[in-house]
Amino acid sequence: MVDINYVSFMSKYGSKWAIKASEWNPGQQEFENCLSQVQAEEQERIKKFRFEIDRKRALCGRLLIRRLISLLHNVPNDK
Image 1 (spheres, one colour):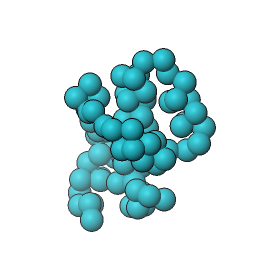
Image 2: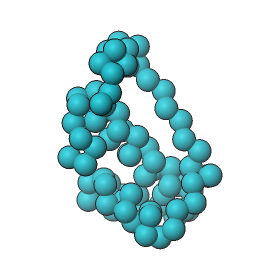
Image 3: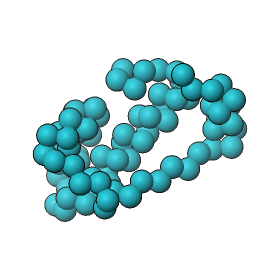
């Protein structure tokens, strides 16, 4: 469970998260599993990127957004 003070702080002051997509080297199955966590429209958009690094960055961004919403609204990440 997330500390309510942390959520209040994020709501009031914002939040900055960073990820080094270039250091994430998922196998095909791991990438597909992560991709299945985003909406179908986003999956199609992500798959259209020509370069792998761009696909990884786009996917990481969508997953971070889902995690932030999950924290702020106390919704399980898989919903």
